[in-house]
Length: 283
Image (cartoon, rainbow, N blue to C red):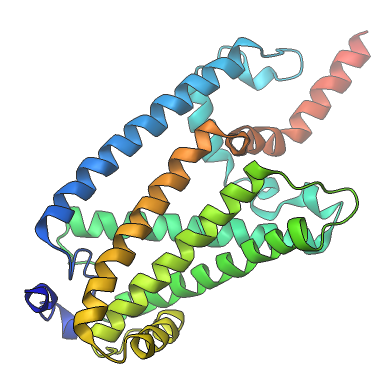
């Protein structure tokens, strides 16, 4: 029964992304229902939290927020991600260059994986897998593999720095640990899913170096049994989705939601400095 779920993909030499390969049909349906509910809860919780922010705003210190609505704040936060101050974490560099580059690698790899996931969904749902094929898929897969490795290393660095070898001025707390561990588990489970898929498919010529290593390890653990790996694949895929949804839903209910406000304050720091100087001059 499980073998029938692993039919050879009908694409350019087998070089494509099979989103639901190896998964029973009910999981497909359940995924879309759960994803829709997750997005709705995330947007509603985000809207409510930003609405609380705006109820206590200081117009003199934040002129760009005068008349802003929660939807405008969310839009501005996303657009400010492209500002040099946000993309390169200049303010963090004033304290520690090592921390700045670790944060850069975390942000860049996270953005790459989010965009990659959105691209796969767009390709699967609207183009029926017709975009990511052949060498395009190989390059796409390679980039996401490297991004996942970068994210895993950088998050591990922050966990060690905060909880194993913390500087005197840094105090770890549970909320920070939860968000970092969740993010790390999302990446690790993604490589487990990719590695298992590659092992079951006899390691096709995809450019997935990290996934390939994971596949070799998983293949050894299950002694090459494709039946056992197919069962493990379903469990790993389900765990990856649940961890991903849990990570996303945790954000608006934790202090980590400040990432939206951080984009605005960081990108607009020069504008605010000039505004404050103008107020002082008027006084």
